[in-house]
Image (cartoon, rainbow over all chains, first blue to last red; front, side, top):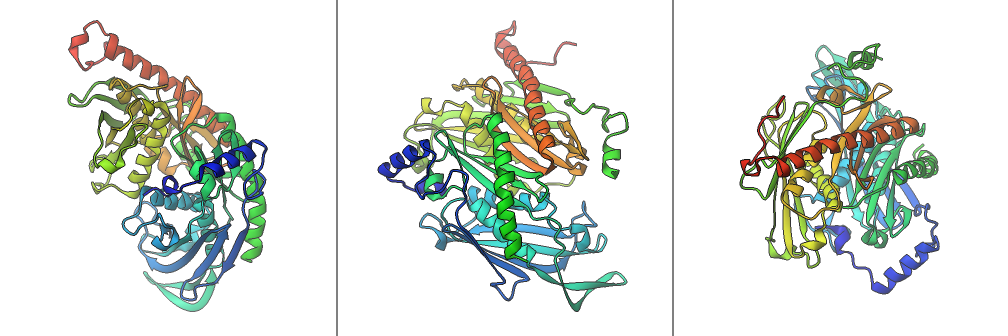
Length: 270
Length: 250
């Protein structure tokens, strides 16, 4: 069930929104390239190795990290496992329903996972215990608690915040087996990827669309950048086109907007 | 860099002998599935993919009807024997996501407003997969839509670029996709010069991002020439009753 298509925006709000966008303004008073207020709380779930509650405007996501040991994939015997998953809970929106994950939910989880994985945020080689036999497995599960647009960024920030503050047992290798010790260490974090999602409405391109804006967007693009301003993941969404010039402009916006969000993230998860 | 050396030698030759900006061999054939309203088969490197289109047809279930346009459905599916290890035939999360982005890549080119209250179905079956199967699938699917006589604004053609070490290269094969450092599938509407699919993974500097993106567009236009040729063969060959085109004359 598509969240976007079900969201009804009153005709008069639509007209007002489009009118203001033409003048470079938004209904909630933000500038076109201004994300909503971001709040990051960490360590909210004691039973998790790491956790975070992130609010981006009224969109709210809780991410929890669970760490254990397991068997590596055959094609990466020297790397630990990192799996990111997301579920839009039925309590999060009148349009969300229980049941198997929708196309949108699967895309959300995979796009967030891609940003974290491809940026090499976690050094997976440091999570290898016995090559081919035993590695550290890191599962990051995200519960979407309230839907108000741009779940891509809200979820991604929750994952980054939870991972950055995760602690795990230190393992030692005895022969062919990995055994846990009482020592607790942080997860090996190398980078801080930041995802920035933009939407096009009419002729305007805006950063961090809320649900109302998402209901009216005709194109969405998410670009994830790392600390050095490299581009590590992207996904264009919606059944529409984007000009090559706009792709490059969006890349620059993502680098620039991402920088400020990254400082806040690093500060909040120190 | 170890991977870089393995995937590309000092002279810039890749494992299969291609230069950085060379495509793998591509063969296209339109009208291969007799029952379908439109169909196409593509062989791109080791990729072997058949796409078929049914419709415009009645929408089932009825509540999915769109009053002002056609409902475009798509499914990207990999045969269990298409990869090294047998793939479970049930659709994976990867296939569900790719089905969605393929639909969103094709829909801007289809004049869906011309077929209100109908469904147009695009089935993409990967019989053998190499790197770049989603862009190959899109390339075949847009030919299948054209073959079905569906009104279109343009064809859609895809090409994937990526990174071997720090080097931008065109059209990654399976090994390069798995062992390389990044993959960027791009689909375009070639005569309009607009992008309809963009996915990125890997770590690109701003310069490499632009280089790979622009190379993908340029190479896509090369594949577009082959698409046109395949359509021309289908509809303007000397013997119009012969059906599917047989092997190309040498």
